[in-house]
Length: 120
Image 1 (cartoon, rainbow, N blue to C red):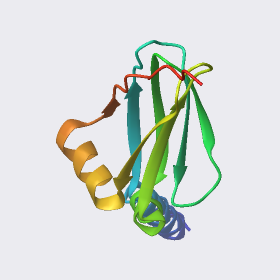
Image 2: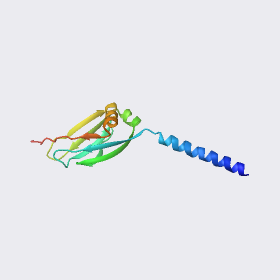
Image 3: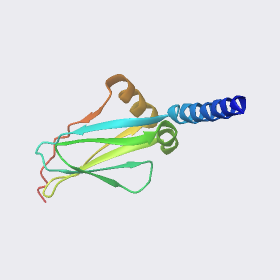
Image 4: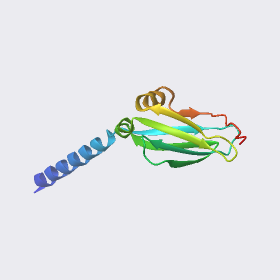
């Protein structure tokens, strides 16, 4: 009876460690965005590939988005756009590989666009 108890516990423990090991190996990345515009107060959106734009917030902005490396590579590019009334929109794009390299090298995506007044 006692031997059966320990075998069941060992199997359960092995299953738990197996599950923890498989979820711990996922290739999710925290992508830290730090965006400061001049002047501040611009609204920032991002998108992967040609997907819909996703609102991040207003500058100055420090936000973390969680994406899998597979998701980034599949989208082929990541775009950021800064918008403010009375100013021209500013956009920056990264290829999937350059975004991943920048995150690995610097730990952050840092962008500081200088907004240009729209004189129209």
